[in-house]
Length: 277
Image 1 (cartoon, rainbow, N blue to C red):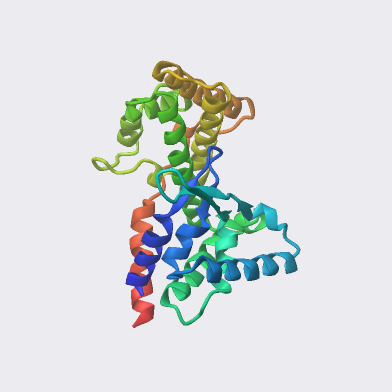
Image 2: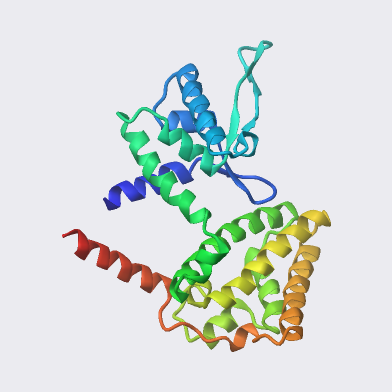
């Protein structure tokens, strides 16, 4: 069971793309190969069935199946346009549901995209009903995705020293504390991830810092490392001021959870193994 999960994460995450707004998508022709379809004609038939399922659910097809036709080289001078799509996670889920069930890859895709799509559909009401640790896992997942997009935006802005860049953000939000300072205050072991040792409220503040910095780098078309660092610091400081203005708790004053998310994940896997026996 664990081997299938690892294969899912590797195979489907490896062909995932992120656009300039931080949104994820998959190319249909790359997904076709992973799902073991040899001919575009047959795979396009599966796509059409998935579109019908989307329509029958009263969901706008264009929001999940975006046409992205492209030109391919046939020789030194010849080129030909071929059909292509940018697919949302939900579109991939529908394709997996309408694929050939005899293919092992389809079964794996059905499991993977069903679980991941469900995670993305969490509502505000559902979030409020989660336990604190469940909220932490959810927020941590969002910060990982956000940091990936932020790093891409920072790279385009000329950032080369990413540790320094991220420290500027922490210093703004934590009144001068760097990542190392935060780790020492939390009494963490060497190289232990500080984000894995934050509560949901602290993670939410950092997620806001991450998304707002990415937006500023793109909106202001920042192109130097020094300007990117300053922007990150400023965003962190602004968020800190908002917390203070609203009478909130400063992030460095929020309690550190007793267990890190990695420890909780190990306990969860151990329990799953016990239940499987």
